[in-house]
Image (cartoon, rainbow, N blue to C red; front, side):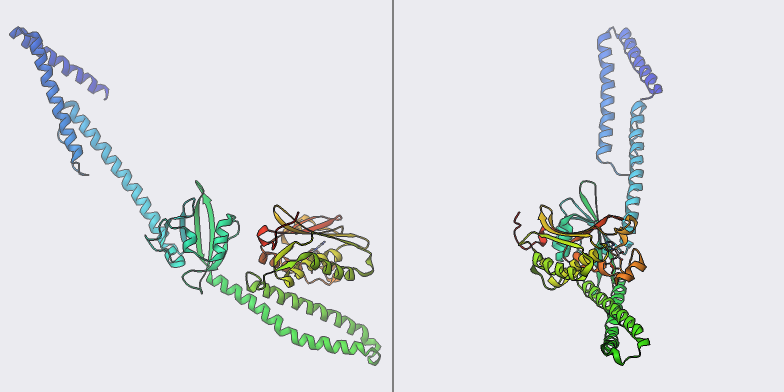
Length: 436
Ligand code: ADP
């Protein structure tokens, strides 16, 4: 109530009392006339309250309030204005919600909101095309019941969403979709799903091209290498001026063959997500055999190669792939460690899973190279790499093999003091109960 109304109310009350007193003076019944006056006022007030109540009860949005007198008229108008203001705010909010819904519906990417348990709460129209969600039946359903791909279930449950996941769409095998999951608020999930079929096809074309070229080059190269070998076997029939050239050609030819083999192996690794053979591999005997090869590679260089392997610890996966990855790491240690240096190979398990580390006392790698080391053809020093006969694909192969065995590679190195390459495998990848 503002100041004005305060004064008016007091004036009205004084007027009422004065009139009652006057009536009392005339009639001689002060008490009765005062009581009668107040009763009339109370009755009038109750009537106004009843009118207000009726109006609020049967209220239609744009119906103006009943006419009121004095203070009651002011109360009616204030309530009416409050309601109008509330309606305008609600209208504006509704317009914002409508716009958000229209724009998300127009998006080609699917947006899905899940509660903390992973049940569907809300999704846009694209989610129906990309994931086949049905409105409203699927509301409240666990997302893993509707996207049934085993890799999605595993990805969703492991709760590590740093890397996106790519799988075929549940609605069509030819469509590839990519999931980005973010957690927000009270552990709710926001899921963004994109159609990446075109990127996937381009990637596939690139892989097929590399695989085909490597495959096609293999036969002519085998023929050339074969002739070179025959010529070098009969070196006495060859003009002595050509011997050195032939030797270099044979050496470079064999480098090219290694390169093609590595490219083909990478193409094979990229073709599927998991190894086709998934048997328990006895790692300690595998490492023994690689250690023998490493010693042969080291030859007269007097490097000390030691192996400490926990026996009986088996890893699920492909023996050929694991051999290729582990030998790349161990042969690199031999290649990049000076004569008389130390190479220590360890294979063990703990609470976090199983680990293979290859530690050398070699030349080491500057920290700035470490993040890019597993890229194809990335070399720290290309002149040094060509001396060691490397292809630059070794660590890319290691990374792919580990990915296929749910493992990851950790590299630490101090230039001039040596490097440690450690492969970490999760417990789920172990084939037997660990014996500590
Ligand atoms: P490459 O066939 O050239 O050895 P890799 O992919 O196996 O290719 O290795 C990439 C680069 O990483 C190498 O060129 C080398 O510079 C560096 N590197 C790999 N292993 C070691 C190591 N144990 N010590 C020092 N440098 C290494």
